[in-house]
Length: 108
Image 1 (tube, rainbow, N blue to C red):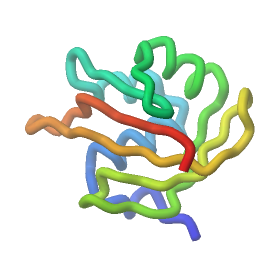
Image 2: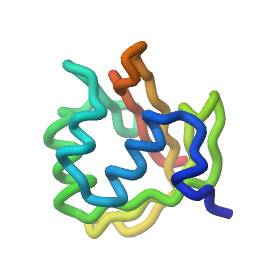
Image 3: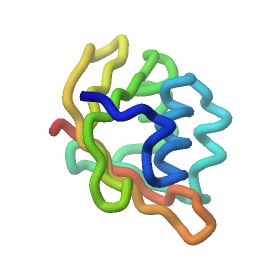
């Protein structure tokens, strides 16, 4: 079962998934707070390098299956041209201005 992106509860997370699936790098970058950080499978990564490699140059796409924590934690089927499809978990820290200061992902 997939949750339609437009039905995701948290506006910042909804915009994140929308930007990923639309391959909208500029829109994606506007969602991030200055100095935003991320981790993949528990290890901090260079944000710019990771998003280029894992999302934008490899046609990343998220199909959200479940959301918890007010929409700030997701389980999604994530696919890209590099790794194929896998079940992933995502969590987000959203600042008061609505921008994402950190996201964490990894295999679910």
